[in-house]
Image 1 (cartoon, helix red, strand yellow):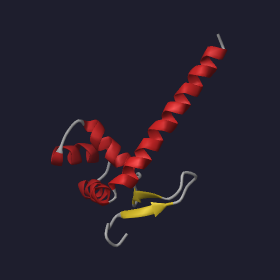
Image 2 (cartoon, helix red, strand yellow):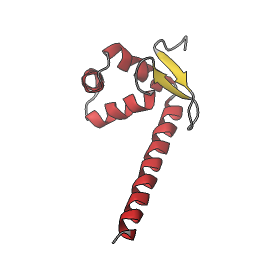
Image 3 (cartoon, rainbow, N blue to C red):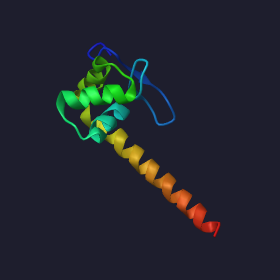
Image 4 (spheres, one colour):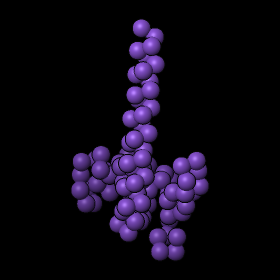
Length: 98
């Protein structure tokens, strides 16, 4: 946390994860940056506006991601897998109701 001011760690059912103090998890910020379709400062500014964060908060998430990319990429991959499994389960349930 000393190396990345504004980033703290949260424990939860999915394990320990990096997040912004008073904000979302780092993986969520990085996902939003990628979804913006923008690059550089335009992506930072857009994500800050969209997520109601300050640009220094978004930069803190980017700084953490730059140093711990594998950790955050793994968290994002697991999130996509879980969302896909939830969607597949929902579709199976909907088909069972026909």
